[in-house]
Image (cartoon, rainbow, N blue to C red; front, top):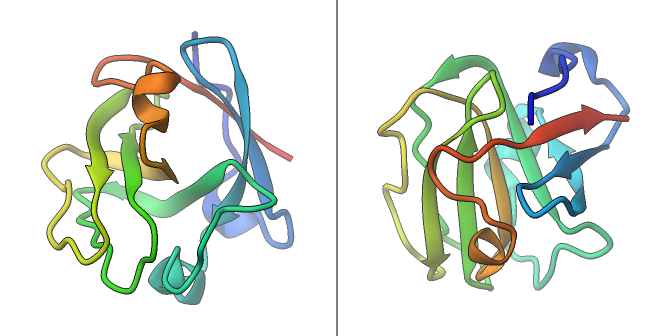
Length: 134
């Protein structure tokens, strides 16, 4: 599966969602997170992703992005994805309050989903996803 050309984060503006086709063929509807405030807040203080299946953190440039779950109330899976749509790193069943997650591989975005979702949807290092911003 090849990643569709995505709109640069700076041009997304008010578009707040994307669809991520995962290796199992299912399509997740995710909230796009691309402003500094949204990126800082993420899942802090939230009890669920509703009405979305997850959050897609879209960075302005490729880089080595380290995440944490301080202030997060639920366990998460975090999946780092490069510009070609390839999964480059995965952290599964991350407990709230965990520091220094990921950042070992260059990525363009990170997908946060409920714990267990990475395994359920076949999201592992080397798998590919298709991201469509709407």
